Every structure is written in C-alpha cells, then in structure tokens.
Amino acid sequence: MQPRLAELEAAARIVHASIAPTPQYRWPLLCERLGAEVWLKHENHTQVGAFKIRGGLVYFDHLLRDGSRHRGVVAATRGNHGQSVGFAAQRHGIAATIVVPFGNSREKNAAMRSLGVELIEHGEDFQAAREQAEKIAADRHLHLVPSFHPLLVAGVASYWLEFFRGVAGLDTVYVPIGQGSGICAAVAARDALQLPTEIVGVVSSGAPAYALSFAQGSPIEHAVTTQLADGMACRKPDPAALEIIRHGVQRIVEVGEDDIADAMRTLFQCTHQLAEGAGAASYAAAALEATRNRGGRVGLVLSGGNVDRDVFARVVAG
Image 1: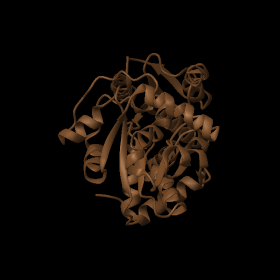
Image 2: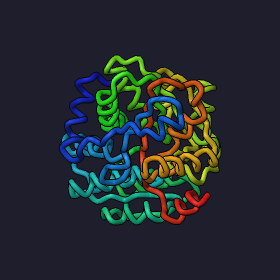
Image 3: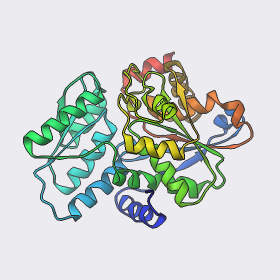
Image 4: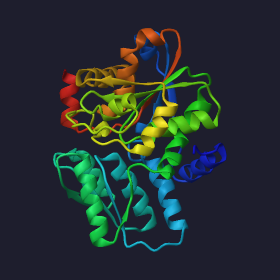
C-alpha cells in the first residue's frame, strides 16, 4: 500500500529537522544539449553527498521511537546507504557496523569511517556483503538495517516532494535504480500529489537485474559487471521494490559504461557539478531518449557525487 501524502510530509519534517531542502536548477547548457527544459535536482548537496541520508534519518527516528533497546546496527552498502546509516547512528549515539564488498570506493569507505562506523570488507559484490551483514546481525544480536524498507522510501520521498512542488509540470523524470528506494520514493510522491508525471527507471547494462525483472514480472538475479555505476550494482532485486516499480514506472532504460562516463563529463562541463556514476545515470538515460523528450519538461536527479578522485580524473580525461 502506497503511503498517503500526510505520511510523506511527516517523514519530510523529520528529514528537514536535520538537513535543508536541496536545490533544483534549470541548467541552460543541459537544456541546449537535450532540446528540452531540463531541471536537475542536486542531491549531491546533502551532508553525505547523496540522497540516501534522508531515508536513514526517518528509519532511525522510528527505530528509537518504538522504545526498543538496540546493542547496535549493521548494514551492507556500496557507500551511500552506509553513510546514511552512519550519519543517523552517530546522531543517536548508536554503534554501527557497515559491510562493503572488496574493492569498494576508497573515498566512500573513508567517509563512512569518519562517521564512526566499524567497516568490514567481505565478498565480491553487494549481495555477498548483504548476506554477511545478515550473519553478523544474528551472531552479534545487532539490528539489521535493510537496503529497502517503507521508512527508507518515505524519507527519500522528501526530495521528490521538494522537486515536484518546486518545478510544476514535469513531463518525465529519470531515476537511477540501485535497491529501489529512490525510484519507489518518486512513485510514492508523484501518486500522493496526484501528478501525471511519467517516471522512467535507469539501470546500468552491467547490472540489468531490475530491467530483466521488470520485463519478466518477477525477480531475476543477474551478475554485476559495472565498474562506474557502483550505486546501481544490484545483483538481486528486492521483491517489494519490484512490485512498486512494475505498477508505477513507465519503462526502464539501460545505460552502458560509456554512456555513464559521457554523462559524468557532460554534467561537469555544463554545471561544474561532480557526479558519481549512478548520479549521472539519469542524464545518461535522458540523453539516449532526447528525441522522445524534445520540447518537454524533464526532471533529472544528480543522486550522488561520491566518486573517487582518480576515477573521476580518468573519466573527465576521456
């Protein structure tokens, strides 16, 4: 069942007690490139450089409100969810353990450690890290913070309320898909506001599980090969997220590594904003569908800017 507007607004109040609304700008050079009125939502401007912080704030508010005593929390991540958990846990004085796969972003790892988390490296991809987090939760009697949950969606929906209310009449929005909280939040906010906006999901062609599952109508697991789009490196879709996506999303677009790299360069050139791979994916998809959107009003989200310096330098250099 989708959340009502009152529930999303209550979650937004929790979020805005800790972080300010992020801006959305109409960038002329992006409009010129895509032949449309293009608005970019800057979730790279939060305290952790990504949208995930919003879900963590709401999740932890409810976690502590139920009166339970917790020895600590554990979560799996490729980085941004882990920063969200670390940020919220630190604010509430709760010990947090974060599991990441080997080879994870060095700078994301450093950012999580700076929030006081215990960082554990395990496995070759996010799914392996998540399974290890589940084991640690059982062994240490810790609370497992999931990667997808209605409270996370409600928190993330706060940026979509900001966006939809800040820019009237968006025809289409493009949303990257990792585990699903971002795009499910878009669906929740659009439906709560009773808007006709078309929502288009974006996946990496090196992590096509959600696209395949969307087409099939049921979860399909698929190996992950993407390097640039670590925030979309999903091997196993969440069934609850997939159900929302199937009923609320118009279509899913796959973007390749070259598309993502070009989008990162374009966003830097046209806006001088730093975008990680997943953060540039919405622009990459909109660029592929430029003919479809010509003359329309298009919403993109720069969902995160947490990319290692050496990786970004290579991308910008082409």
